[in-house]
Image (tube, rainbow, N blue to C red; front, top):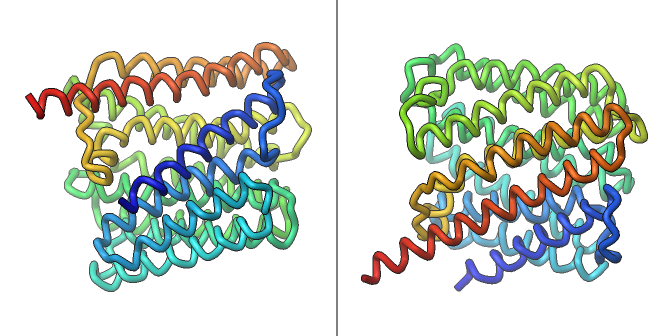
Length: 353
């Protein structure tokens, strides 16, 4: 029963954040209830989902306080109580750190958990920056660090049986993750310099993480395995490009590189990784089976093609091209959700039969 309100809040954050994002790129869709779509999408939607996954993984009743606090924070943000919502997000971040602390105590500090725990600290940095000064660009590197380190940690865990998962490589990823977190802290006070350093660290992290990822060896196996590997490797490529853009341009709002710098990471890397891991995470968290369908390739290809269109449109100053690329990004995510829901419903009918 606890899962339903948390899932509803996460879904509401996704819908409203997507709506706000479409309005920001030029579509006339009325006025969404919140203008800051980045924190709502990253901390509200994805933060709630990640804290829910961690709570289920730890298996302790108290751990549910993290996704519940995050879900209530989303409700406050959607009602316009931004300050209250941010304080609740801060509380949710503290509780997520506690979850990782408990997991580390049990697991003897494995490298993948260390990286994910560093990501939870980045959540606190991001919310702290938003509470002190409502300038999103100062919190962007920390919000990016939260998602990137969480995902890279999960990839480190899932690739731990691969031949490339040597101790040297594992701790190289940990060191790179620490550098990403440190740079995100610098960016709170020095946004341009911090973003440049963050970008360089992201390139290193992408290279070290991908070098030992099992996806490099499973890409040709066919079926779900190839689908997941393709999404993962494409995500790494976008992460490296995002890091290069950050390092070169420093996340300067209002420049031609600003939109590509943000969305190569949050759409190209993060959403591609979500599409890759959904068939594994959803059954583990919600108990809903998602049998693979070849139709899932359609939203994955659509996501990357439309992101490339969006990036080109932004770089050359073609606003309509950029806008329709952004629409395509949202359409790809919506299509995947629809196909995954259909797959889950079909599996449920087969199970009942």
